[in-house]
Amino acid sequence: MSNTNYILGSFADPDEMMYGIDKLQANNISIYDCFTPMPIHGIEAKLGVKPSRLPIAAFCFGTLGFLLGFSLLYYTMAYDWPMNIGGKPSLPLPNFVPVTFEVTILICALGMVATFFFRNHLFPGRTPRVMDLRASDDRFVIAIDARENTDHAFIDSLLKESGAVEVKYNERKYVSYE
Image (cartoon, rainbow, N blue to C red; front, side, top):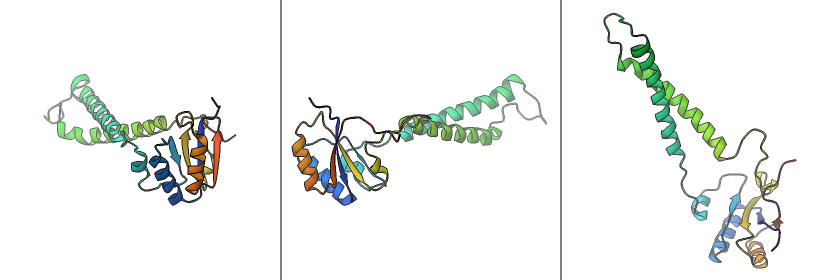
């Protein structure tokens, strides 16, 4: 077995890359991922990417923020130090709305940022996961798992027929910027 982990087809034009995806999928070759310097409309559907579960995380963080905000107000205003201010009740729910809303938004926003960094492996000090350095500049790259697809010559010819500028055989999983 070879040491090649990925076959990388580098394209200069996004339309050629989309044609390459169609050609590879027509020949039952599974694509690991595509790397592009800009968003391309329709590529997620073509690759079969599942919808993001980020809204579920946002709801969970928002619920946590609501519970924390309401609990803080309840504890301070009704449980720990109840005060009779002008004969008003010690648990005035309408007065809790602004603070609870703000804490909900704060916890949801901070939680979403943390989830985004965690999900995309953007920890401080971590080497970025980049297959080909030109993919963030001016190339559109299709990465094919070489261990699943064993006919490398056939894949190479399909990529070149569909307009690939170059085809690389990547032996390491990720390339670092250093």
